[in-house]
Length: 228
Image (cartoon, one colour):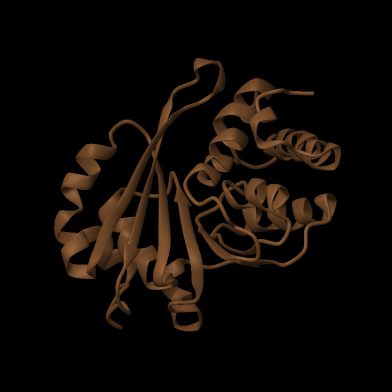
């Protein structure tokens, strides 16, 4: 059994779920494009460990609601759900093949209280505005784009966590106008190393003090064409 997740004090049942997750990911990845990372040690370090690292930033996820925008193969929300079974998860994933993968994965792992939505974030905001304690996005878009998509989903005083690599400081610089316009502040920058020297990562935690203006998020084409 891979030891990279030892720091998270997993039960035998949780370890088994991660093993099942890995095995299913590898099988399905041969049919549809889920990840370019397939070697076991790399999946455990670059996907599983990386996903769980939010626990160092938000120490209590028990019974919290979390929204994962552009989850792809389920990162980070499915690993977090395995670690914190009481977490209430909503996944927004626009690609139908990946949605079907996630639905099958949840059945295999016997995970409940997971709502998987096959759509784009800006299309469904009307039903979920200010609805979540935590919103996460990993490898989705640069900060000015993902901030506009994500911030309307978090509750006032809630957290948006962006998983980033080492170019994060230049992205923060690009996002200054966006942060001012959305009335959002960068609360915490958490830097960490992946196991087995597989790279450095950063979690950026953003929060807002009041309700986001109803005009945001704009249509995705407008966001991409002219980021805030």
